Length: 102
Image (cartoon, rainbow, N blue to C red; front, side, top):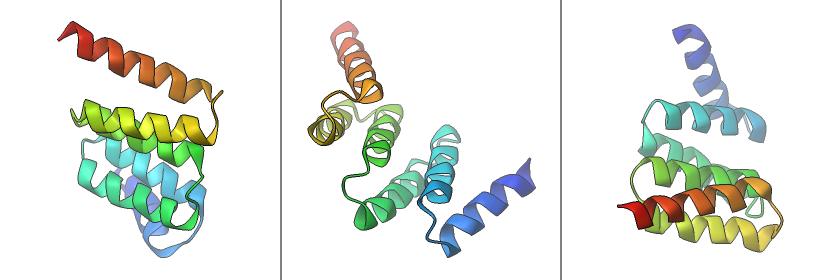
């Protein structure tokens, strides 16, 4: 598994394939390496600022990092790009529910 992870990260760092960078950023998120994930999402968004998947995924990483207020801002950005994006709508609702239950 480690070799696969390294290959994904190396590919994302050397390649400009958005899907590979998204995969690497997701991997960093689930491993709790949020700063690296944020950096990769920012790299994608420099190239494709309206990439709703990257915007939503960055919001998820922010939420996972405990930055709920900032995550909500990013969910709103995703919904501004695509107001009917089911993932962003769901994730925003979950984040708001978490805030009200704390």
